[in-house]
Image 1 (cartoon, rainbow, N blue to C red):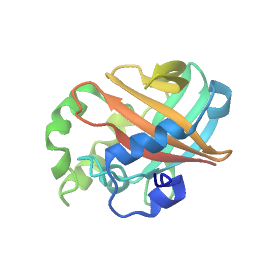
Image 2: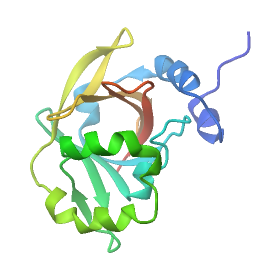
Image 3: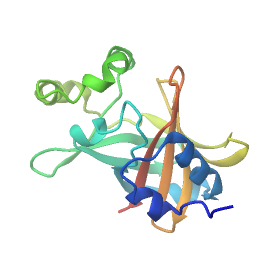
Length: 180
C-alpha cells in the first residue's frame, strides 16, 4: 500500500480532493485551546470546493484567538496593509452561499469594500472549544451567529490545517493557518 501524501506534498498538488484532505486531516495531531491562542495568517488549501479562491479574492488575512471566549474569525487586509475584523452577517452569508462560485466576479469586490464600514467590528464573533469531530477531539472555533465550525489539526508548531463545516454544505472547506 502506498504511503499517503504528507501535508507539504498535498499542499503542492494543484488538484487535490476533499477525500485526500480528509485523509490528511485525520492523520494530523490534535491541538488544544491554548495552542490556538494568538493571531494566525490564513491561506487556502484548495480541494475543488466551490469556495476555493473566494477568501483570497477578498484579501482574507486570517483569524485571531484572544482567549476561548474572544475570537475574531474573519480578519481581512486592505490596500494600505491595515488588518480589520469583519462580523459575518448571517443574512449576507445565506444570500452569498448559493452564488459562491460567482463571488469572484470583478464587480463583487468593490461592493465588499463599499460595505466594509457596515461589516467591520471590534466585537468577538466566535468562541473556541474542544469538540469531537470525525471521532477525534481537537480545538474547534464555533461562530456565534452561523451554523459553522472550524476544527484545527496541527501540521507543525507554527501551522494548522483547518476544516470548515457548515450546515447544508456537501463537503468541508479546508484552509491553512500559520502563526504570526
